[in-house]
Length: 85
Image (tube, rainbow, N blue to C red; front, side, top):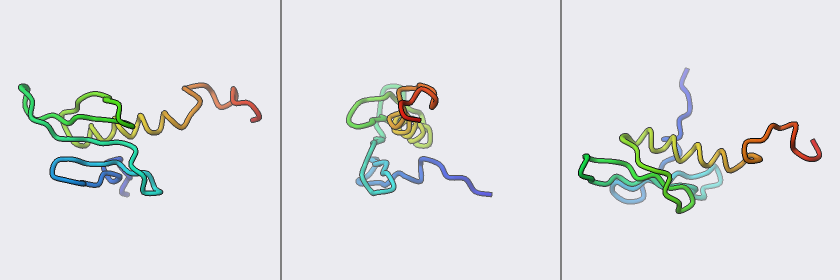
């Protein structure tokens, strides 16, 4: 059985630059391949904020997607703590 991975949300908009897009098509993150003194690295951004660096595109997409998903919850609180639920 195949599984979905955040890399499937990545669209290469220009060489070595990927945008991660939500189901509605709006971009929510960006991963860029850069040359560094330590070798090639992927710069990971979520909503314009640097999250860090990754050694693979796959890991970079995972980091950006995790930040996107975390942005939808009540800052880590339990569902039972939500008002009105």
